[in-house]
Length: 463
Image (tube, rainbow, N blue to C red):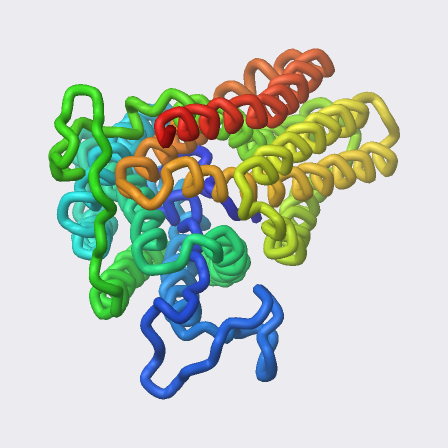
């Protein structure tokens, strides 16, 4: 099971994890503590004493609990979503495809204004509102009886879902220290994987029962999980918001409130370049979720069960490696180099997958699994580097605006990725895989010059 923005590779009307929720960073002393807990954080992923499965920081434990509830519900709905819409609501494959596309467009469009709303009114209240609307929209699918109603509701759910993803990232920046954000996102990404696995297992029960009440129960359970998450976020203690002094912005005066200025992230050239490069790297998720299954079934002799094996390999490696992959990414230049290495590893993954064509079944299966293992290595590195850059290049200002733009780039990639991979990659065979590898390697390696541009411009502004 893929665990990054990828789980929303084809934005689904069921309010999935918006690509599972980006894990929050661990809190240091500045974060609120549990009523009875004063433990200090040790090395990330290695709690000092006690269970190695629980993080020593109280804030991270709270956020991990919220993430677990959210992703169990999301995994449940993702498991049954397609059959619910086609068998219970009676949608055709074409209608569902149109709905997915329209909902995806709404999700991309919603990220930027949601981020700006977080800057103006605070991330936590905006997030609570968005998640509550998400819960109501998800429950509303049980009342849908026409295609126009489905289409409208799907767009609303996707918009608030993607908007909530951007606002969550802004909340993490507000409540937790800058030097621990990336490592914390890695820690909670592991929690995300666990939650999605548990939710998918519960969804398998509904699939086995295969009845209207079973599917409705799964969808409504996901809606309830969102309500629980909204309550938990509402009760989350956050420090008072301290806004840095506003910078002069073209078209806005120096001291103009951040929430009232034109979006600074949209006027930050280097950040936009990094956003686009990260979006290109996110094509790897469509490669895993769409390209590999189609390639295995249509173009190799590997047994079909290999598809399930690829998801297991990816999940296990991400859980084992994601925290380690964040080490050393605190410096933007290092984070850019990590993205470069990720691009090269992903390119190698594409080549190994391509070589499975025309080989005996066992050899083909081994190559496919090896290719997916390489993809997992590239995935954890690209996510670690991308997380670091999304915060570092924004600095401690306008987190909502910057995370909204960055999230919009990822959402756009996740929306168009399946179509690109299924047609231009799988459809073109070996040449398609080589082209995708070149694109991924180029995007990763281009992060270095983009970050140097950003840092050079910051130095010129400071001078």
